[in-house]
Length: 507
Ligand code: NAP
Image (spheres, rainbow, N blue to C red):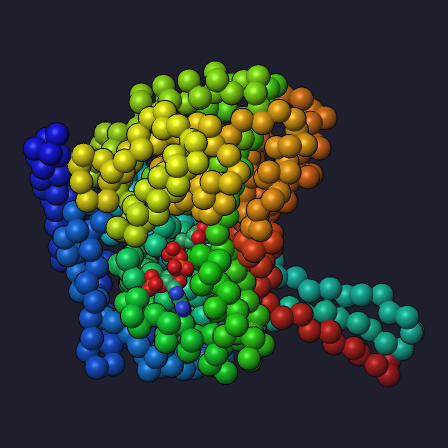
């Protein structure tokens, strides 16, 4: 077994190295910070290594920005603001559109970067690039629709106008699981309405953000409007503090864990900054007896195993009604054996790449051992994959109960825990017991039940007989401790706007 794993790993590394090496010399392969329209080293010259999760090999050394760099980037964004906020919406729209076109033109290279630094299969990475670019396209269109209001007044000699204006400099902090899409979903909206931004990408995946800076530069986005400062985990807290406390920053927009979001909110409170937070979830996936079983299994596979279970809207717990439970488990396991292939993201057969790092693997292992110690059964998978490294076997647990860790904390890995329930009320109560509420899914063909459950689930996004939900046209965001605000859609610009009431008197 070990020997097979060793050869498979070696083959995987070779294929990865070849694909990544093909980017050598590409203008998209950047390692410096992008501040004020210039590529710069970190203050003091520090760098950190970016590693390929599939092999642990070093991909690049990137500028390790610290608090002084963060201050300089905020200053650059502040200096870029006056010119950008007075540009016409058509001008901003045209530049965002050019950025979008460049992303699409370079989509294959951008996808390779994601697969190299994040590990996800290449076709998923390509899907992410198209999805990420679609936010630039969407917000290039929304830029021209930032309408105010004229409101009827109570007195004949007055008129009331409501203006919408850019809030100012926005700090953007993004996670590693969608290194391009989480960036464009925020920056697209901010730039569309006339804000300038400083982006701090995750330590694991800075290359995608830097490649987007290169394309922003090529698109002609003016100096200071879009800035990127990578940092290592050791510098991140100090950089984050600057980005959330600097008086020149007006708003922060964060995607990541709820725990980090709370730290940033505390920082932001001192200077009362506007904060939008896209945080963790614990998505319930409910299958009622009336469901179309094949549709439910297809939705479950898509929702659970995309990005190897590392998405914030991944089904975290499967609640399956007793009449359909055994058939669902049987079909799900068959689909897992048939459709899931673990391996290098650069291998065309692969559907399950590695987990992002060792900590992620340990979290999945811990949840499985906790569940088994409390009576859960491993139906398939259950351990590290024979490929080694951070590869993990797609796993399904049955006999799961609500006292187990896997139903209480986000897994972020290829683990599907299945709980059996009897009544609709019981399923909704289990789903709503969570203190977070990002996405929720359910499968039913009973129309009355569909309305009831869609309205009762305490989440920001509901999939009814659908496992894939994200699109730029629809608002993305959660309730409870899953966050504040919405991204994408016509609402995505709101977090970057101030509303100003102008009263005309003496008429
Ligand atoms: P994380 O640890 O919170 O990291 C996210 C980002 O925050 C990274 O750039 C990280 O930088 C940075 N960060 C961490 N500590 C910080 C601090 N003290 N000050 C400033 N920045 C700090 O989250 P993650 O584990 O990478 O991402 C997974 C989480 O994101 C999950 O909970 C997932 O549900 C959530 N997520 C939510 C959405 C959504 O739209 N709601 C979308 C995707 C992911 P370093 O990498 O340098 O530490």
